[in-house]
Length: 223
Image (cartoon, rainbow, N blue to C red; front, side, top):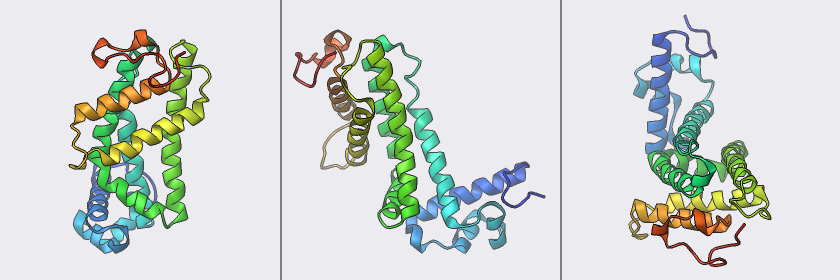
């Protein structure tokens, strides 16, 4: 028998916990967090009401676990270009932007649930801040590596630059799918990558010819 509050140690436990996570996500996306009750989740998962509390002490705890899975998926998805050398900086930025847009598309509905809660509840505001901080820190690390390699403007403050550029991509990712924007994926990725590369001062030699390398000063300072 599984111990309450512990991670699943049997196949049955893993299936039950996974079913609760899937059911909770579906219901939060369909009804919104406030209108979902524990018995709704248990019924959707096909388990007894009390079984929910074997794995989660509240629907807030369930949502936090769902968000953790979303963050892990986005992190893993956007790490695909990390094996490229610093000299392929433009390709790394492009690959990460494409992966991020696709990941946000997959998770858009549950991310909207988190955003709506973060506007009114301090615990979820902190959770949203923690999620964003993890991406800002990775952006900082990437920018510092490029600065060290002489491929980014050394005068840029890494945290401020990573925060600003991350906010640009994050906001754009939530908006670009709107039919009124009229952008397909390739256009969206191209715009974001050119803006990011220009903003960090990626040297002209590092830009692919197909982008139409900007003249120095057109999109930002050069290292």
